[in-house]
Length: 247
Image 1 (tube, rainbow, N blue to C red):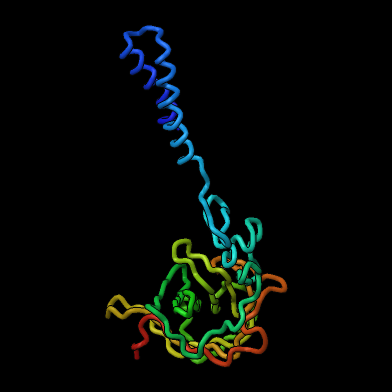
Image 2 (image 1 turned 135 degrees about the vertical axis):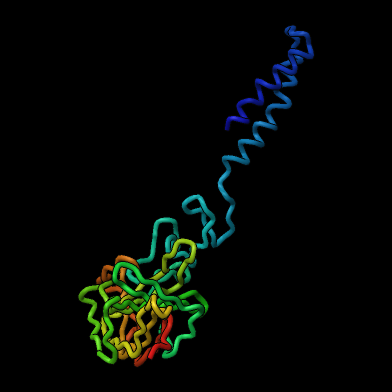
């Protein structure tokens, strides 16, 4: 509060100059009268915490809706884990959460890094959710079924799902990896610099079940975590990322 600390000295200097440097009591009266409201107003504006209306609470210095916040669910000390989401201030497994058989992706994309090819499909379903399919870059085997068990999460081939993704922080309210089912690539196009061909792949995921993990990026299975679907499996999901027009 450097500006506030300068106010008393500045006002005193002005008052003394106006009075010729004498010891007139009016100097004290002027300083007390003017300085008090100015200093108080500045301190109040800087130091006052944000004002929240219920059901919001000040958590982490910000006004937060604790009825829906996964980080502050119900109060400022409870965060939702194990694939749970915050619903009416309670951490619960999301009900009715599934992946449609033909997801209506919004701007699906392909990323290649370190020998890994990622297909990322964002879709809006009340929340921003993403389906991620990982393929080893050198894998060109089509129509070969890969059984998913979750034994080595994050190692391709794999399928992952992020529910309610925050674009700013690139984190999901709940993250899941397929620990049951079969992943099959039906079309694989490799990048070719000579012809200008772009990479891409398409395929299907059948009889799949997704289990909660602690993160999409460095997944660790959560014991007794939530599951998609709650019971049974998702019969079939078709996906396509990047260029799939190669011969």
